[in-house]
Figure 1 (cartoon, rainbow, N blue to C red):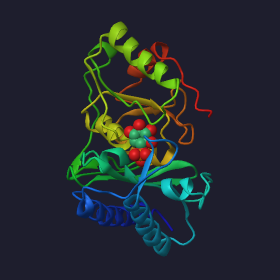
Figure 2 (cartoon, protein in one colour):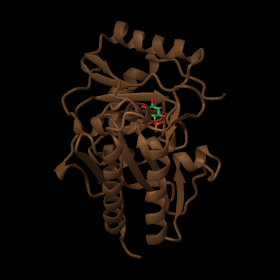
Figure 3 (tube, rainbow, N blue to C red):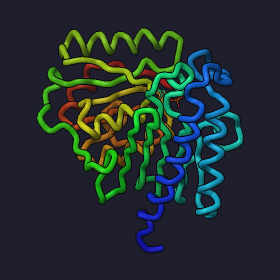
Figure 4 (tube, protein in one colour):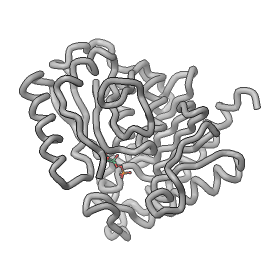
Length: 276
Ligand code: IPD
């Protein structure tokens, strides 16, 4: 096959744009067909399902030997969330579904390709923001054609702008989520905390330099696969929530413009168990 990552990127960009137009076309419809998944904060719409099918039908035709992991197919039991060494497309049709049903524009199509379990190609398209991010390992990452680079100047967490999320759990873990935010604000007196409602867009904001660090327990591989390579190619670092090696399947992530910020964050936050 040679280095066909450029071809993989081309196809991912094509179908991300198609998916984005489907989302944009229904965005103003006040009543999305919403169903709850794990709880009232974990939603799926007919559009999530239709967009995932659109993306997989296209990529399966182009790359029949590849494997696929998609948020909605895993959620409804049609697919296993199991990463192998095979070329695997890891897809979130709408990252930020809660935003989508509220007509908040922070929504993104996230299409990543892992080869030998490593992310090689990533496309994150936010149609309502007119932002298309992409990255290819070894070839850089870009926003609307402009080369991305993480913020270079901030190595002290007290000066950092941090993104995190409250996530979709509504149990006692919320206490720890809030205590961590309180600790970061009071101990480090950080510049600010932002929540966009999309893990993929939070990570892309690290890549563009719009925030310095993002952390969260709870997202899934499809929320982070594509943006992981985009951050890496912009010069950023992604780890698990202990500051150890990034594992796409770990559901705990820290992503920052440099490792110094991660080293300062880790002792200030209490780990959240994802069992349950
Ligand atoms: C969610 C978003 C959100 C994050 C959750 C994710 P979804 O993805 O990325 O920001 O807090 O952990 O599940 O469900 O909208 O695809």
